Length: 557
Picture 1 (cartoon, one colour):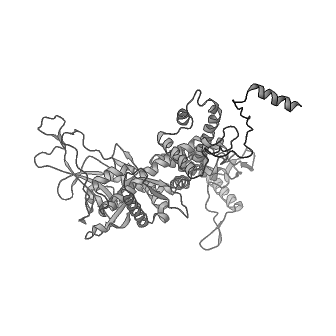
Picture 2 (cartoon, helix red, strand yellow):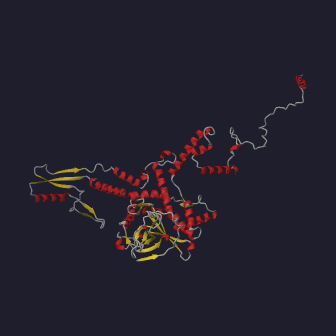
Picture 3 (cartoon, helix red, strand yellow):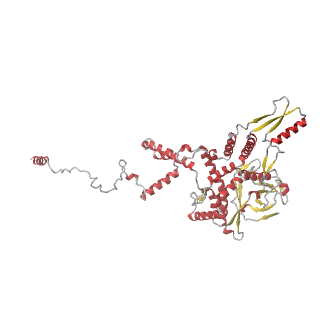
């Protein structure tokens, strides 16, 4: 089966200026398969084992996810990245940094909500993120009405990663078969790169299940246009083979080691746990054959082996079979100590699982999960900073990087939706894409504890340095160096304080007595009875000293 499903095409922005040239071709580290044009199917070139490796890797990743310890670590990562809440959506679009009108922002939020509804993200967020994390890639077919593309995306259909491949096909030129040729121009850096066609190949029976692309045909399947598929990878690429990896890749060895150690431990305990007896049977001077027959008769006489048959529910006798966990029967010639029964002790160190714990921690570290989360180890105290571990802070940053990488899926879907509905143009998207952020629900108490403790330390330092403000330190210096406020935060905080003073939410610091803390009266306001200060009587300058002396004598009389 070979065919082509024509999709839609969204033109990119204008290419670089003709003077901006480089001998290095564009690099796309997304694990795409490369072909050179040769006939209808194409020929496989210089990437031996990519298909087999990629197919087997995805299959191995999914098998690894079924391991209990790996599943526990994966669940920790997914639960940290995707927080389910009955009231809020797991992710919301953030447009505060976008320089656009309120009408455009409202339309963008509406279309993003439409995309979340198509994905049913509120209910399936955990499964979608988990599939992306385990496989290292995720595919969605953006189904639109080709007759009415202005209606936007009609459906987002999930595609199994084992049934889809991203392909870059090099179109071979007739005049020159080389991959890169230098043009005849004045610029020595001007090179002619081959034309690359990008598309996806979908095969319902999975891509190359045999692991040999030569047997199945390199381009066997349905070709789907590049813009019709949302393709989001983990960002990890094997540079030697050019294939996309999952974050589980570096845990392959750790899981295999843990499995072997656990299996060997089980075998050792089964073989060494029971106590076994050794029967030394005196056979006298009997010949070898008769001695063996005599030993066998004694063994069958005293041996009791009852086996429960789960199929029939019966208990039957299996004396003719001897297992390694049973007793030992050994002959002893005349001249020995006669018939003797001794006991072999069982294993003495069966309780040691130090090696198991080591490989468990190694597995968790390979997945960037703090080992303290293993089996509920370590305390969790929301009141003390001493419980904040450095591993938890590193884990928080790791989850943040995963979220940013996963957000590329939303970017691709949103781009298609906005362009199809004529809300923006492809050129506009290149300008606004970096200003669109996605706000995931946050549920990491360790990070909150870190921020709280840092704020307490800053406020304590501020209280110590406050008497020296205006003498040795300025307000701006204290806000930038002690409180670690940026210029944008300072402007925003000052505006908020001014608005709250105007609204009467907080008092004006300039209208408060710095000594008593009481508000000062407004300008021209009467101080009141309690605030009146007795004034000295005014002396009339027209009254002479002689008259004042007469008044004084009258008062004495």
